[in-house]
Image 1: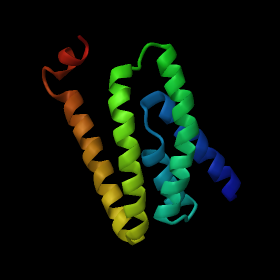
Image 2: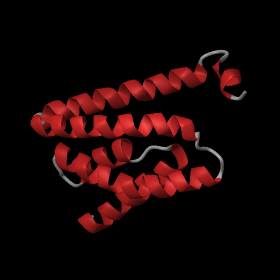
Image 3: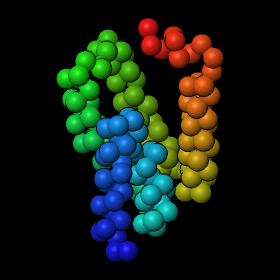
Image 4: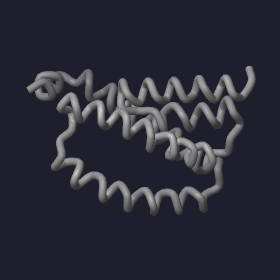
Length: 130
């Protein structure tokens, strides 16, 4: 399959899942670019972050319009995330790609398992729906 078609599929999948589930960059873009397009881990992460700017903006505006954004939480999370992103991007550039890829995979597995466990824990469903 030509790279352009794969790139379009990756963009569609990441954008759709970003809007639907709030994921896209790390979960879809990075692995897809490494596995299907042969990009290095650092390049995949960089492209992913640029793509997230636009998908995050559109998804964020959509959720804001639907009343799904808690402004006080945003006011604390965003500044901290910006500082952490600068430090994380700097550190990612210093690390060997294979080490970064292993850390990335471990984090994705941990977060995924934690979310599945949280959704199935007795009593949690009622707390979230209040």
